[in-house]
Each structure stands twice: as C-alpha cells, then as structure tokens.
Image 1 (spheres, rainbow, N blue to C red):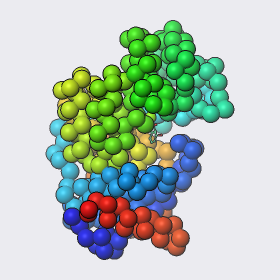
Image 2 (cartoon, rainbow, N blue to C red):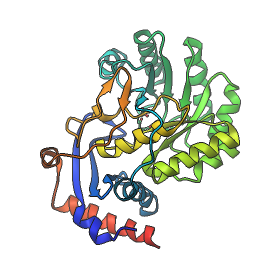
Image 3 (cartoon, rainbow, N blue to C red):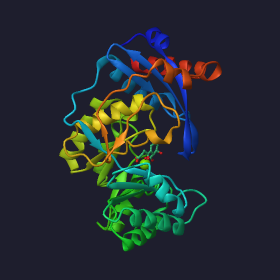
Length: 325
Ligand SMILES: O=C(O)CCC(=O)C1=CC=C[C@@H](O)[C@@H]1C(=O)O
Ligand SMILES: [Mg+2]
C-alpha cells in the first residue's frame, strides 16, 4: 500500500459550498490526492469514526494508485434528487436535472408532515407524468408511519421504491412484509460496510441496495457486492453518490457503468455545489463516463489550510494506519 507520507504530501483539503442544505450540511469538506493512476478522494462525513472512514480511504487509494476497472458503457443514467423543498419549489429543482426519467424525492424530513411529503411527491408526479418516482426517508419513519406513508403515496401512483423508510434492518424487513409488494424497499443507511448488503439480503429487508463507492471501499468492492446480491437474493443495485466532489463522483460513475443492468444512479449531485473540482455535466438525463483531474484554478478556489487541513491530515494518518494493519 502507498506510504502515508506520500499521501500526506499529495493531500489537498477542500471545502465546496452548497446551493442547498442537504444531509444537514451547507459545505462539503473532503481531502483529495493525485497518484500515478489519477485523483482519489477521502471524504467521510465528519461524524464517521475511523473504522468506517478507513473504507473511504481504501476507495480513494484504489482510484489514485490502482486505477479503476473498464466500464461497460460510456454514459450512466441518473435520477433527479429532490431535497425536502416545499411543493412549489419542485419545478426549480427538477430544472437542474434535464432529461431525467427517474426522480428521488426526500421525505420524512424533521419538522415536516406526511402532508408535506404527499404534496412534494404529487408535484414531482405532475412535472414528470411518465417518470419513475422514488422516495427516500433516510430512516425517518417508525414502522407504522412508514406503512401509512407508503400506502398513501402508492394510492396516488406507483413508486419505484421507498429508500430506508426506517432506521434498522429489522424494521425494513417488517415494512417490506407489511407493504406486501405494493412498493419495493431499498436499503441505504443500512449498508455502510461491504458485509452489510448480505445481511440485508438474508433478512429479506430490501429489494434494492443503494451502494456508494466510498463507504463500501472502492469500485471493485461495489461490483463484488452487486454480483453477490444479484446471485444470492435477486436484489438490484442503485449506485449513489456520497455527496462526493467531482473526483469521487468519477469513481461512482465508473462503478455504475460497470454494472450490466443497473438502476438509474443517484449520481446527479454535482449541481448541489456552487464550486467543484471539475464538471460532470448532466446531458439528457445521463452523465458521461470520464475521470476528473482538478485544474490548479479550481483547486485554488476551494482549497483550505490551517485547522481544517490539520484535522483532515490527522484523520488520514489514523485511517491509513487502520488499513495498513
Ligand atoms: O441518491 C441520490 O439521488 C443522491 C445522493 C443522496 O441522496 C445522498 C447522498 C449522500 C448522503 C445521503 O444522505 C443521501 C441519501 O440518503 O441517499
Ligand atoms: Mg438515501
């Protein structure tokens, strides 16, 4: 494995300003580095412990030092991602996702009601009458709340799936039994390590696994998980972004392009940033498969020094030590 001093010497810490609050944050911090195979990203969210964060480092090292596997396609279809905005804000959000035929709508936001969710989803359906609609509760419902919400949402029209309706795998399994095929259930937060997807499959907790390259530990690890899930339980896979910079998003796009019959990917998050390390333009609902190498100008616009940089370098050293064990 690459020496930690080499990583530290290559490390650039960046802060990307966000257009909207998403996942409770308005600035995305990450550390990126260039290696012989390209650029890699290490951007675990600040609250993640080192054991989890080490997987993110493994993914970054794969991209920068090993290189990524060859994609099967040149373009990857993505879903529009609709934050928990008021219903009258939906069309402005969808305008940022030209050509998308699938939308993922955030629901169960703290401080909002089921009526807010129903109105937001109805607005998306109206704007995309032929579109496939997903909802993502980020674990925010109890089992009875999820049952009620999904029942009312499907009464208005079909749902592609409901993502992480409740917090635990056991609850997901229960909701899946209760809705009895009225709507597929997807696991997202329940999958944070490479071993989690099999547990989800064994408990019959989901029809769909949302997988992100960084927490799973790299593109190859994602492909192994996708193969195992399809073989063991017929679970389909959605590759999604972890709110990555354009560098990390490149790896997600490659992963999605390596999966034969993948779902529309949750990789259209580049537009959430007002400044980024590169561009993955969304054309006709799809992203081209290409890797990004940040220019000096782009880096200069978002790079940070001082206390935040030191914090990330310490974290990099600790996670590298865990991987080297
Ligand atoms: O899946 C998408 O459409 C975009 C990515 C996305 O929604 C997320 C990215 C990063 C953190 C998560 O809270 C969030 C999600 O819950 O899926
Ligand atoms: Mg999710």
